[in-house]
Image (cartoon, rainbow, N blue to C red; front, side):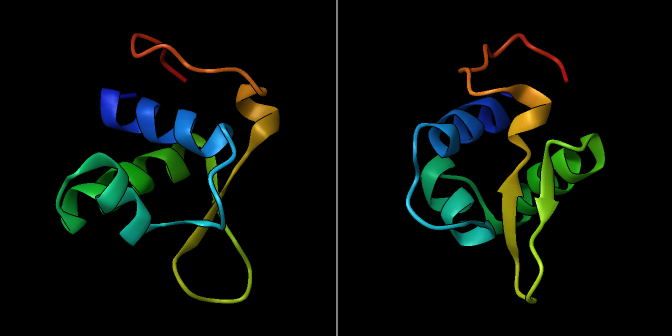
Length: 77
């Protein structure tokens, strides 16, 4: 897991308003839409995020996978 992913997940766990989207990831991490999509897809594969039902590009953090704790940048899931 890279530093962008860790920081964005910590923000989501700290009570980010609404759902996690590619646009929010891009804004939070100040990265391109392509980079945000690569980060999100990697976390989907790892099982840390799941695509929410109802269409659109909204994702939920699987809290059971990581617990309600902040992640360190060195942590690998």
